[in-house]
Image (cartoon, rainbow, N blue to C red; front, side):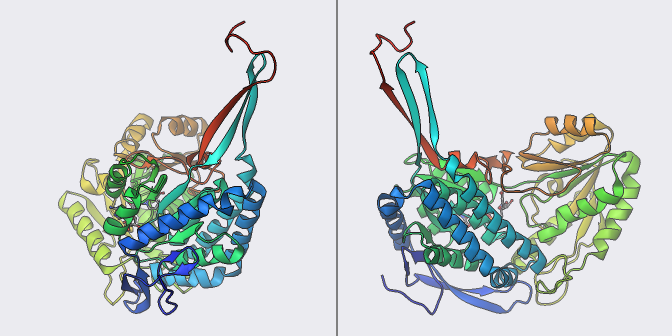
Length: 487
Ligand code: NAD
């Protein structure tokens, strides 16, 4: 292995290795070349897992929670110091508005700080279950983690993965999507610069079906944390089964906004517009189904269309931009195909619906209306700026429709009746419910799905359970009893 500084490629241990292949990254908003990145080969998977395994058995495993906390705070400081450059790089690479990306970089910083602050809780437990029997438990790091993230929130997702793993004392091989690896690669360098031992964080940009799959299947990996599509999540689950690995999956969604007739529409409508069109709809938590009580349907449709039509779509680096480009022209064409199918299935097109001319992968905020909840556009993730409005008759109907997809990531409920809001929250089969508020993730609040949206919760204390094993220790402290449960 030798280093190559000309092209940013895989980071293994403390070395940037010569890449097996290179890929030219395209700025999706302009179609112009952005950078060349080196992609990992199969040998790099083995080398990265070996580096992570070696680091796990080295000095890293003797670092206590206070040292791990300090390093996480230093990593947060380092990201903060580079926040403007990281934000610009991410905005250009993903095509998202700079203001959105700045918020995501801020969220990444807060994620490192959150896990730096709760890492002291990765202790264990103690008690005297019976007589002179003492019990205590130790929380040991689960080991080497394979962490696979998608292209839609590259730095923030990397932080969501790395922070709890490092807090728990694990080592990681992070695999960003090959189209958006730049900020994750920089994060790997920053981890080294702030003092994480070499091999604790390895970063392998590479193709999913080859490098991602080889990483998940590698016998040296103890835990797999995956964020991506439900289809790939199923394949990851299969690959992680021989030998058996711990696994957590954050997958797709088709989340609803539920707007009741008594809602404050001045708040609900712009919030529901934001909930689908931010990130151009390329978010797992996009509230892409807008369920509206029939009594206010016409009013909501008119005001929703008006607000969506006023969104500023354009240059990701312009501060007034509200919606950027899609990730690629190929993805834009797929989104457009799904909109055309929706219209073919009887949905009514009320706004947008035609790809913008020009070199960038732009697609306008699009509004559909349907009565039939079974059509593909309602049931399948479009992953683009496409909202579909469906009317409901009453509370029971709203709950039935909200739960009527294979996904269960989140929902937002808009109503002035808080008793109903809590009733509906309890009845929705999803991981997160927002009551009269559209935001979905805060460090300290568990984030994840039910049903085909995956399992495991990120971003909270319980995430540390995903990255630790509990070891129970038992000892007599006095006279040995015949049986610990003897009276
Ligand atoms: P994807 O499943 O195609 O890819 C995700 C990651 O998996 C990428 O790094 C990819 O290279 C890798 N990958 C692909 N095939 C693989 C394989 N066989 N083995 C191992 N790794 C493989 O998803 P995508 O299109 O990049 O991302 C969009 C999807 O991610 C959407 O469905 C979205 O809802 C979901 N997502 C979920 C969350 C969440 O927290 N629930 C967050 C963001 C995105």
